[in-house]
Length: 422
Image (tube, rainbow, N blue to C red; front, top):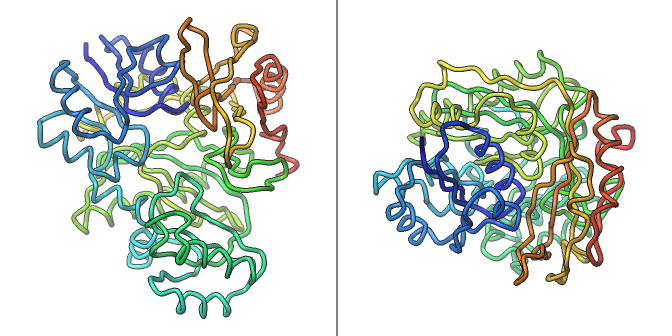
């Protein structure tokens, strides 16, 4: 029996906590800082995910046997290294390994050195050089801020003027802060986008089920990028052969490459992929489970998540298998009005207990009010999730229940898992 600390406050962390709560090997669950949803199944700890010193002190003083890191920020800041220096068991990659997400420039150079398929492109630290390169590329073109930008640092420019304005905003106006000091310019890949996750102990790798997410705020994939407005699993175009190709040409080679370069990777590695002519290409790597994909992947997982995490940390991932449900899963994000721009919070949420019994609600931007009422506290507020015999059934269940949940200025996309409109 173990005491576990989950770090983060989003729907991903709520989904992880819910899955861990099902494990017979868990004695006590803590979430830092958590949200109104995690408060019902764990003890919330009022420490921010980025406060590594305070989190380490909490783990040392509260007999925490295992810490699981949800968001990318603490990983990029070196939380795994800090915990390991104090002999604390923690799930996630080291700071050096997590650079595969925290630096798009490093990630691209790693793929180029090791022949991992990705879009043609170049990295830049000089604005004028980047501008000159842009003028030679076919449109649309993709511009990526080098550092972390909360899932919003990738812009697809459809005109040269838009590309130039984006470049100026990133490199000169610092719209993403220091994250835009270096940038990557890549050719736009057309195809079908999907998210592919593996658990890895640095040698062995076990895939999860794949998923697709929706990054734009409005239906039809229009409007600015967000942290993700919904997702579904599995993609209808995914096949076992495609999965084998992804493992052999991308996931296993990049894990091997990181090890060879002195950055052994242990944790979850996320490949954001474009499938073009049945061949996979890397759009980006992330150093953790995705959000909102986790909310549709973990409900399909039959195997005890704690067992998989412990096997990963203990370098025995090759000795286990992961079982998955056959059902499809669809998740729709309910967001605050104005998101991903300015928005207001503190509005009461009603209808949470009015949904069907088989509907799952993962909290993100929520908090408990003084009388125990659930209030909005962020941009993405909830993810409403349903399992079904197929995507159409799961989708119908979700959209039958979403209108039952209400808060002021709520917004959500109505085309999640409508595969005919992608």
